[in-house]
Image 1: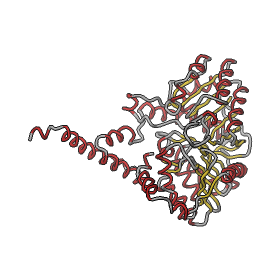
Image 2 (image 1 turned 90 degrees about the vertical axis):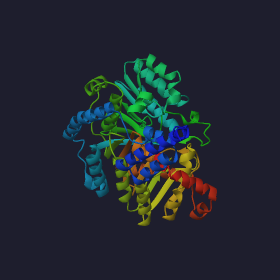
Image 3 (image 1 turned 180 degrees about the vertical axis):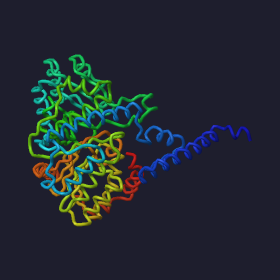
Image 4 (image 1 turned 30 degrees about the horizontal axis):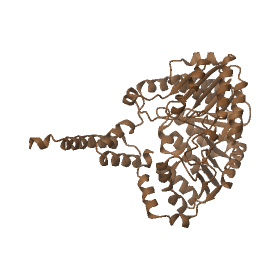
Length: 488
């Protein structure tokens, strides 16, 4: 009997039962979204020991104490800048011109995150990746004081190397250049010679959210900096879906074709909150003070220039709870005529799925555009499990056939737009550090809708009857992976 009690199998199962009970209790008391909770309960109880370890590693939005303290200090530091922006007239927005939906979204972002809508910006929306890279390099070549950049992925080859060369040239002529690149997303790039080339030229280069055993113990290592921001001289900024890669040289063996992206070049008031977002991320990875960075890069509140009203919403653990999701839900629920949505990864939570279906059911024309092929097999099949829900509600679903459509955008009634780095999956909405522009401007809405139409013209519509006839094996695989979709 004693030998049986100490048998490895008995000990293993005893440990599993104790851990499964304690962690299941923790999941219940943490009160995550029901779908997320059920998915974790399934993983914890169905995979002895492994399931518990996975939960301990990535089960909660856990960040280190130092990062929490840094975020609190950052909010305090930027409160003064927001007050000065108000005195300068940057926050004076004509909400009657923009409409009730825009006004309510502006209030929502301000109350949940403390990010105000700024008045007076110019924009240029670009959908040609070669032109984007060349224009960014040109802007860097024009820099006189500072170049601030942060990206999730940097990949060597093609025109991406032209951007790197422009940064080195800028640093050599006395421009202060700071590059913040995600440690995991750009892992292959960090192993190349290019980081050493940048540092040898004097460029300040930091990995964002480094991974390691110690960091695993104090915080999650799969929380990633997914933002894409360029700020030059505090006067010009870029953001959007595109990593610092030339699609002709990036993931050519993945079988999905070239990645298709869009970026927006901005001037005017909106440059300041984008610069603040990047500077905040830089501060969290080092010990620089805000005053020191402002002085070194000669940063300032950008003058009003243009007519667009734009709200910058940064999101991520410790920065916001569900603000980005709430902004998107408010946007879709406020639609009266049309919603067009583009995303490479469509794995929505129940609230987002219901908002999309509800908009269609009340007569709004809803079009969702996703790529025909994506680079993640699990996400590909989990995403397909939602097609039936959308099609049965009258949503028009389109599969983009000319590469991996990576642009993340929403237009509502041609008046309110969302454009940025956020995918419509739970990783982007809850775990990654993202940035989204909510643009309250008819002109921008028209430009973005034209870009979306170009994607529609290169897409095939999914017919409900045809989709319903796919094999049982595919349906089983899709619905099985849907069970863990809240964890993808």
